[in-house]
Image (spheres, rainbow, N blue to C red):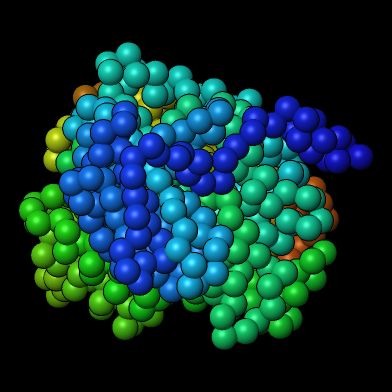
Length: 568
């Protein structure tokens, strides 16, 4: 009853949103012979020349009168523009999704007109909020957490850029919803579009698809990968597109190949197992080749948003890099990106933070221009830990959050923003003596380890007076320093489980619910753990972490430091 009531309230207060460009220009336009899609692009009544317009297959440029024509087969069901440098697509009525696209509604042989309006803006300096895996499903208090915790804190964080006159935009990297609950909890991808307006989301919002944004009610077939995106395309438009923000070229791609084979977990309305592979379709790659060909200056930064990480370190440790795509499309994508000197991939899906530098893998020199940023989920672990009254934690124990990229012309920097802490907080320190004592005496820990003996039993931690530091967004060029009484300690990086994750997420999700699924009997090792040994149990440890840009983050760790679910 409560879930239904919440949904009714949301529907009553919902701001009216437009699914696509509603603009009608006074400029004249006439389709060329054979064209099935045509129209104009303008700014304040003046025609815009040289703007790229695409149906997802072809790309044409507007003429000096702002006109375009495409002989389109309308296979993707939409037409979209690549917003040029120094402009923004219009939004209206409280909506935050820019109207850079329009749905094609006439049959494939009938010409239809679609116009686009741009607003001029100085955005050579701008900031990007990269978010992933919001996973709203209308349960676990996710709607209220998103509205009352995440959005206000995001608004506060970006206010510093607004005050400085710096425009801010959001790239959403998929899994905004959770398709297994679409029909049970009456919340699908179109509901999320309305939610953005309802909560007053504070920036323009550019979206891409995740595996959970596909419609599980569409049965497996040779065309299911496209057919299952119908609701997404109705709400957010094309599955792949590009925009220019300042001097940076942004591309959003769909790298989830949806299969939805028969079987799997049963849920209302779902007809398959919701399975998928990691792939970029040949149609996207062919379009991407045409899109990147329009970027003449190969020093232009290229930022590609996808759902699943593409380039990542094998086993999470820096060195050998695996390409997380089907072989053919992985090679093709890398080849298309190789001419550019500065490429960033931003992704989600894994609910954890990892930064992968292509230049660290000498065996694959074709990756040296690429940095892949895998970003922890806004939802943490599907809102479970916060739903249990604990901290918002990702799948390996780092806090839920997002990444902000600051762009000054072609210079790109970034930092991780944990949702429940300030950006000055980039790590957490554990006094392992206290962790050991907690695990040795807590009854819930004992029950958990009785059912899951393969997990880390910190009651057996062998090293006296040691310290473990979890650095949430560590990258290979970061520096970790610890001192005791002014004397440097030897710091070693070694994978380990986050003990706060065990007590704040895993125990509530198993012991509290009396659900002992065998899948939880596998250690969740995090590669961003740093260890040192102090000389005594009660000395103060100074911890200094230096990031890729020379920013220093410092904590004074007074010991003994208590360990608990809500420790900071």
